[in-house]
Image 1: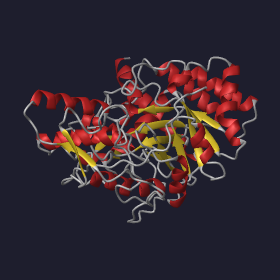
Image 2: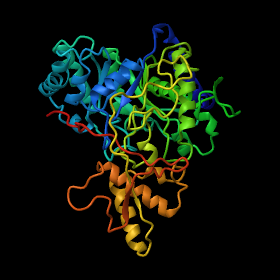
Image 3: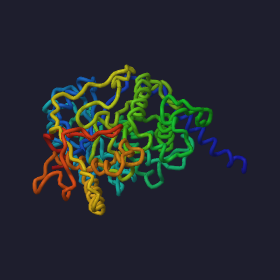
Image 4: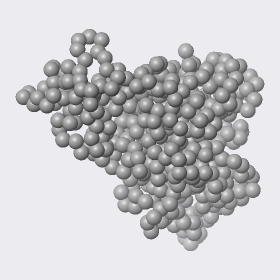
Length: 475
């Protein structure tokens, strides 16, 4: 009896692996999707028509947006670009009855489909179970997903698919091998219900992952493990399967968790993946370029993972442009995921098709920059308490995350850091102040015509803003 009990974990692990393996014949290898996310939490943003043109010029045919904004969706009419729309987290609890699900679909999906907008997917929430990104867990996600799915069928929405995306923190955090992975106990019942709903509609389970988090959560791992082409000897072995990079490790961890949730054959897609370019050690342009130079051809090759070799994996790049108003509760690099600067200029070489070409993506067309002028500190340190006050004030209302340790402006001496903060505030407010003098700061600011950028630190000029983001979910 004792020997039987000792061997039970090995038996169940073997059973789970067998179940996943047995599902290979039912997982059809098709052309993978490489799409991109467009987050719009910025002070100055590209207008939607510019983004449509930018995507078409770069041969990007799949886009996810984080709110069903009217002006954005209308811009994509007749573009042929497949759109994933998000039901915002704040609207999840409003989907309590079939009538509300039908109303939301009518107002946020059908009215745009009738205008030839190609909406293919609905995400119920944005990482609604993540405790990194939110102060609460949205427990009514399974109900909202079920009601939306039922309304899709009842109202004849054809091939429209509903699912919900999850960050890696839905998994238990102490797993050292993929086979040890499982969903957190406090979420397990809800995720089992979601998995059942996804199986009933042939919808994928969606995970979001960011390899740089391994540097934060696993200080004992070699940083090279974050890249597909790991140049170190660091590997993780799991019952005969060898993991040489973090992506395969996390992907197969989710596969094991899904198997333990009763669905070893469920399709697993990547809703967000990226590498930040500022605000943290290792968050820089060379690393971001390297990550995608290796990752996108890997995805395009249908190589699969140790648990599911030879399958296609859909993946959405995160994100199109930086978001200088994005939340930074977890890390300052949260505002620097963009492949593009906010002015529509690409930061680095990337081939969105996954062919691995050594090319820069197309620059956004039609951009108008604000006048070439910068607001800087006049170096008057006579009242340093006042200087410190304005430094803190401007960085509270504008984005100073590049000054963080490891950031592109972290090397600046103190007076230049104050200049950077003044300019960030000045540009974020469109070089204008409705009341009083702009670039004043109690007489310590001065407008200059020469670019004060130095070394890796850019003092940006913002673009001329033309519209505001729409975040509402039901109105």
